[in-house]
Image (cartoon, rainbow, N blue to C red):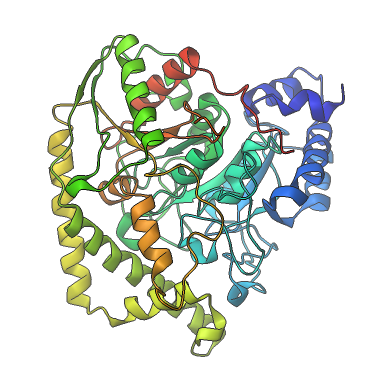
Length: 476
């Protein structure tokens, strides 16, 4: 068996152990990952910028003696910057932009001993819950190449699902870690707001909607990575309560008897796909079997108000990002610079008054307080991650009849995940269900603000009871 085949089934912690014991060198892990990328990437288009030569030089040199020493890693081509490497954000508008410094998150990732092999595919500006940028072409779901891997961290999720690398960077402004985790059958944790730094270029984004973390095969990889990346950076505008102990110590710890609520329906008669309902009910039954108190319940949320207010903040954030790019380029933007959906969102955002924005923020803060009161009664809230299984590629394309099709379809596809970007609460998608067609269906778990530890204890308990790491797409 080759090293590429031997390490393919190992998570990042296990690969790092091989290096620590002297059984493999970092360069051997990196070369093995390169071999897997070369084998599978032509089929799924997950990696769009290669950093292979640079990665080999780093692996052959003195690698930082961190907990992930020598482990290969991929970075999403959005937000986090690597010095000297293009940061396109999935847009032809940015295809020639090369940042001069690492972001603080990347600096911490490198200090942990991780070796960055390249950048992963993402939709333009991370707007849609699919990964089909015109710049690089669609990323394909490893479980079914004609379907979406989700978005906006779709390239990272597809790469991890295909076991190119054991984990990859992602970020999440409305579900962009959890959505592709569900579509690709991997673990996706969205940390508490401001748990990971956005500096030095940003204090927060879109009034705190956006957070950084990763897609992983195992729960323990996600926990250990959060230990090495989290914590306030110089000049951060705010940060969450610091954990009482390392997140890695939560893995395998007894979660106790948790009070668990579950929701398997949408308001106002909207329909969830039966596969997603089945996944939630199975998860609720599993939690009950594991000794937790489970009942059906939902927080009182005005979804219409939430969606309208979220769109004001989201479109305003898109407009501000593009205005910043226009200033960087020293010119105004035109529809030819952007994909149609991005341009529409830009135009919507530019029309909002400052008062519209602040009223939307106020509405979202009121909803956050309603959800916080719900969590006085419950420790965990379970929902579907998505309203449907992974959709066919092309489902989010605008049409002449409906130029807003992509945005409308996105709101229908992801009814629950944006709630936690609004409230700032930690949430995760667990890959514990596959439908009869062999497509992964994630289940969404939410905990109180600042309580990633609760999620990690429960996730590791469920991972032990219902393992998923052995499930790997065949990529035929």
